[in-house]
Length: 286
Ligand SMILES: Nc1nc2c(ncn2[C@@H]2O[C@H](COP(=O)(O)OP(=O)(O)O)[C@@H](O)[C@H]2O)c(=O)[nH]1
Ligand SMILES: [Mg+2]
Image (tube, rainbow, N blue to C red):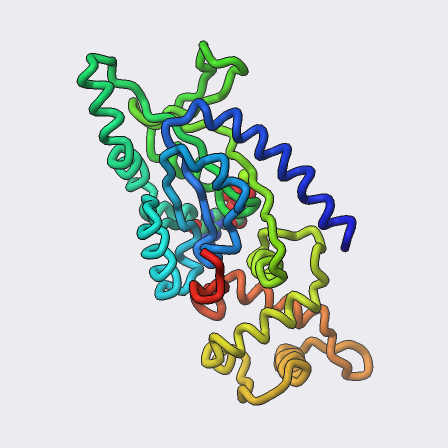
């Protein structure tokens, strides 16, 4: 466990350094957050790098989130001055609103250039976010919606691949991977539950313990409906109940807890318990 916690910063600082270089080329940066984790999927180190850049925050996987909670967070980020959108990169929902939003955010800059007689030019952007937040899916979706041409752009120190989205939007084709950083153990659990970290940073039985306890506290009705539990059981009784009703048994009629863990985590990730949000505005230092 100690070893893995030390393992993160090395990667994190390397990718932050690379992002810092690339950001110089951008008019605007797009930060992808997980709609279920509008706080836990933030990399706090990133904010220092992008504080001087116009930024759009996209809450991706809106289809998996608890809409009410997501709206609280979106209002909060808007109050902080960010341009925001809720999207579903998989289905493409709201993806067509990203470019108009970028134009809106950059309106003054673009007008200024135009009034100086400078030629119309594409808005340059890059997508940043933690692993599995949907960066590649979004890039694919964006390039599907326009005639995609990729090519080297001369004049850039290290030749970068840009994806041209129509005539007036250019996207760096390699997204910036941010490593999640967490001191708060809850943040680690939230990242593990949603599949952002898979490196056995936390043991699965711990993750499921956290998840089931959280669901019992915040989404009890959904648990009752999905698993037929009463709601007054303790943790192990809930596991036993789910295990028995799903036939997760090994020789001698004992519960196969490993299979129960898999069922619970798969259900959470595949929306079998409805849209879920794991962060709460009142619980986080935003
Ligand atoms: N339900 C849902 N799944 C999504 C969405 N966007 C991406 N995914 C899924 O999330 C997983 C990780 O996506 P990927 O684009 O590879 O993430 P990356 O690591 O940030 O590039 C894939 O299984 C995607 O299909 C979304 O808006 N909704
Ligand atoms: Mg990817």
